Picture 1 (cartoon, rainbow, N blue to C red):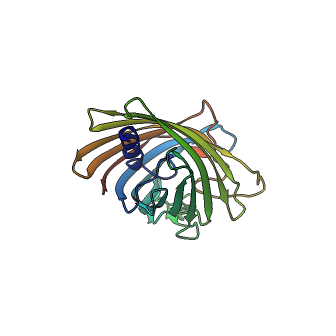
Picture 2 (picture 1 turned 120 degrees about the vertical axis):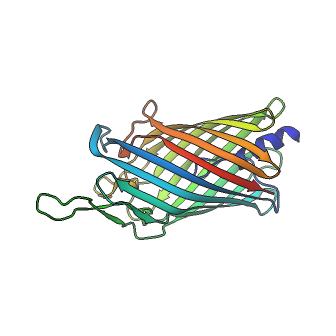
Length: 285
């Protein structure tokens, strides 16, 4: 049981947004809450054809994210994920603010003693997908341009994932594999994802976790024009990242994360290529 406990703690401390994947579930009536601030900035845009384009204007996004888990039973965990504040801007525009899409889901462990689970999550839009930012300077005609920088894409998503995990040795090392499909509405293309995660506990206090994920377009709606790249229509990528989780004592932990994009498995398309940095704190009982 000890080896499974170590791996369980690793996963319940991890950042969400379909990035934290494990076959473990929380014990009944236990809970976990995390608050995380993140920042992302880039001027390197990959077009829908995968061509790198320097837009000349830097895109930046920051967010305050609340994430929670609750053990409904020993084999069912309820999950809530909400970016309560998101700030989007280009270097040439004003900053716009909004609430990100609400993600609610359930994870069901298929077997009592084997960490294999199915997770289904409903992503609920918090607005109609429009949030216009005005340019800082007027154009040649003396008017101010506006660009849509939505914090929610205005459409429902249903994520389904199959996840398998295993701990090794004394339980301080674990590995996880997952795959899933995002079913989208409003004529957006469905998406496929797959990934792997490996983590280890050092000094009984510090977790270091490595992640690899791919996202592909599953269906084809070539005639649909999704507008802002923030809708994610036609977006594909390979991403990698690292988490560091340090137990502060008692029930508190400090959480940091770094993630970035690459093109060695899946080409980067319709995405700004840059790193995301996150810092947060968590509490669990």
